[in-house]
Amino acid sequence: MKIITAIVALLTSFSVTADGWWFSSDKIKDDEQVIFFPSEAYQKPGSQEWTTGFHGWIFEPESFGEINSIVRKALDIPDDDHNEKNSLLKQRLQWFIVDNERGKKLSVKIDKQHFKLNKSTANGHFRGETTLNYSTLKPATKSDNNTLIKFTAITSKGDQRDFSGEIHPIPSKGLSVISDIDDTIKISQVTNKKELIKNTFMRPFKIAPGMSELYRQWHINNNAIFHYVSASPWQLYPPLSSFMNENRFPKGLFHMKSFRLKDSSFMNLFSDPVEYKMGIIESILKRYPQRNFILVGDSGEKDPEVYGMIARKYPGQIKYILIRKVGENNNDERFNLAFAELATDRWQTFTKTPEIETAQVLKN
Image (cartoon, rainbow, N blue to C red; front, top):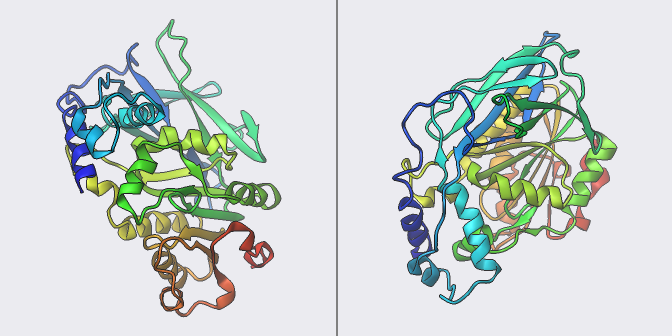
């Protein structure tokens, strides 16, 4: 508890200037930055056109300054320590103290077509949606069997900065993987809050062995599309996406939590994710009613229970469930209850990735 309290105190000390309420012009100023999150294009039933979404974040970086002694003591960082822990802590906390730009209405371009997005909200996030013919969505880049469409923000004359994003066109039929992140593909130790904080903010992210290779195999051999669903906040997207790129995870869509210091305490970052994950996963399933889905998670929190409920509600879409066993609550009684009414050949628990029966996973 004192670790979380200390970080709350540190972050809220910067919240006076963060999330400014002043409306500004649509121009991206020299001291502002833009991050575009991966977006998707999909076809609604009976439509020949593609609905294309955009989602991004505009903000002004803030100077972090020195980490105060309270946080150092709480996280066991000596005052004279200048090692990687200190550097990583600053790097990862900096995304929580940026000055979010509200009221910006950016425009983007795909090829030669321009599209105006909705105004950014108090957390600096903005979204937009348009309908396009596939001829407009001509591939701009290809990567690892993925056809991705590149778009860029329209900047002022003379501004040479490139704020670009990628759109994933997702066919109405095919294989999709909905994957948790913490303790599924990245070792986080969610069941140990002290270790979770350190693994999230102070240590290099550690890959779950074998998961990158497994996902690439599904992507290359089966054209799988990936949805990475996390209860962590969007502020962790920059370091998380870098980690996934470095470890060659397939590109995919991210679904993360919106979080503002003014709206909630730091503890809400890791609150019970059941309701949140249920809503996200159901929205994906409803958007792609003809696609087949594999759900991958871990036993650290409630993934077995969430996935079991989803599979019973959408039996025709959920083809398989994989659960990495972490922590101590891994008895047969729990899993049998979580996956009640599901055939035993539709789910599997594992400790190490080589235990996964790939042929069984994909046969359905």
